[in-house]
Length: 361
Image 1 (tube, rainbow, N blue to C red):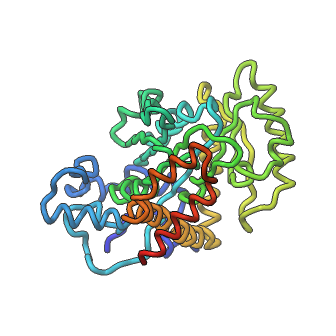
Image 2 (image 1 turned 180 degrees about the vertical axis):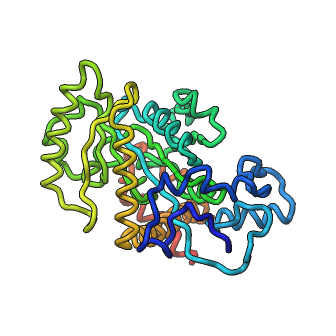
């Protein structure tokens, strides 16, 4: 199977040739640009009524098959090579940290350098109505008009951890569609919501200058999972507080156990308004991917993520099967009413439902 020369693979991980930017220049991608079959923006929607060929293509794409993004067979089809490892980064942080504003500036910089960027932005859903504003895209006006960028806002629909239940599948679809860098922007999260770390290669934490003192950094949780901490809004009157927070987090991270044997988490300052630190941040991200590729940790991490994803899907389907089981479905309204009235404890109600479920198997 033909592989674009600009993408890092398991095969060439031990001998990377140039930086990510050098491998993604328009000149190095000339063969892909001339390919009439390479048109990811005109793929049929998976929710429509597709023909047999389209249906097979969609199934291959959802399964994560590289090369399925091309509607015509690639050269050497049927000869599977090493899986392409396209960079995946997760962006998280508290509300108001400037995640969408950063992505707008950062994304434009990447597309200008010849990259094709996909942004999966997650918005919180209402606990009462179930609706979601999906407003992240409105803060990326320039990037949303860029033909080399794709922005997909999605509601959480009650899913915890700052992501949606279909984020992992969306990552595979975007990679199959030809996008070489995937950014996942989570909802504003706290100390314990970092599910996105199990879906991406690099977990980036964005913090405003008033993100807390050194003790906040020591807390086990989202900070411990970060591969890169970026202090945002480092401009104007906030430069001094940003420098102080940077120093505190550098000190705090020294007390936390490292998750990687080859990468030490970094703390930098950035500003999407002035552009300060954005290029440095991209350099750090490229350094991370190169180091992780060469060491083999990136491939191992992807494999572990597949296992985590498998069990999350099992849990989801088991719960759905439990709720729709005839014996359970009949008793749920009655037991819920007794729990609400205080006549039955939640634990005992759960035991009764589980007993009913097991008795019919």
